[in-house]
Image 1 (cartoon, rainbow, N blue to C red):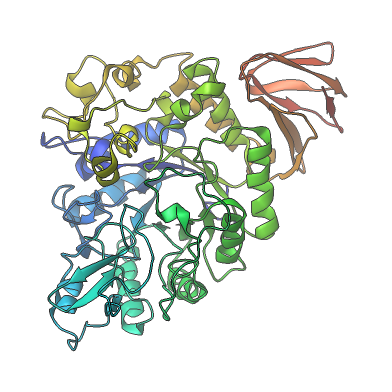
Image 2 (image 1 turned 180 degrees about the vertical axis):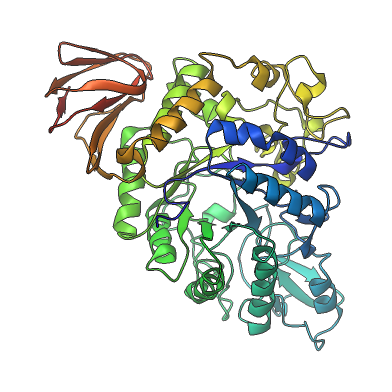
Length: 537
């Protein structure tokens, strides 16, 4: 039987911003339960919940202080169980963010670990003595600025943190840590969870010799504030020991029915494809992995082709997971705006393109409305990097603003209180209740339905067409269906000649006349044909 996740559309929920049921201005589990029918009607197969576990919220839940409980901000374990039951009733699977590489500094494990050098959990985190001059043990940088080491006067040592100082890294070289983490994962699987999205999946292990990183191999195209990007980060992440832990985790999940694990690989360029291949190789590691390759500013046919081909070369037997937006990057309708005839044009074209990709695809809440990035002022920010580096870095708050449900309701129907991030007019104008026939929401529903009804798109093989920029084209072929998918990644009209008989099917923005296909700016087409179809410019 084919696993549910093989061609699934996974809808990411950012719980703080989806629906508030209490009036405190923060989304919660009961709010999610209320809005699950929206996701089911969209045609999604499952939902991914960003962190909902107990946390001081220094990094919006990515700093966990109790792996086995729900943060009161979001509700209770009973609410979680009710969410799982309602989702399953609607035919939706549920996966959660598992933040396993680090905890909060308020976690009982860390409180005990920092108390002394000889307590039972003294070696549960990465501790090291200062160098003779008092400086940190290595030159490693934190993603959020400054050294990746924080001096703790209680122990007289430094501890490692790849993100905030309030997010100390666990020591996975300690078998007790591995066992404790596996136990927390089992806890949620026993409650009926359908899988995990593994945050920073290549950060679990560090170099035990504590070797400093060399400079970046090529001049980094980064801002001066991004010290992390100025190093070749080979000793602080993506260590070979990671594979052994993934195999242990897979052994656990294989004890349950049809569980899915997708890992977030924090690597760039060709290294990302290699790591994704290693982490999904065979049947004893991750089911899927994704990188930030399609979550950046690059928007060209060559780029998308390289991402897809690079994955296949690195993981011939692997299974890809593609998405264009998430909670960590600017919304793609805004990010790729320079290539758009309009926001609506690029929203439709990128939806059609994503739904034609091989593998599993993810969409981020509000993407189905064509939501744009929110413009915030400094006083409205909550994101640690933005607060530290404003205005050089705008941070992630702009893509995390509340979901908009009703245009005429207070705060778009998200909350009756003061929302934790503001709802601005450009987003309010795209509320769910404004999106009738011909809307972006209607288009997403049609495109997802077309994908699910097309064997070529769900199970078919892929072959790229040899087309010049800015045209991306490929065929998807199953035993009883052949589709050629073509996308115009520019504002200018493009024409192609077809050698063979074809017809336009599914959602399209194109004209087919006398074997000539006209693609307006940001145009796209699915072409159905029985025999080989040759497409030329």
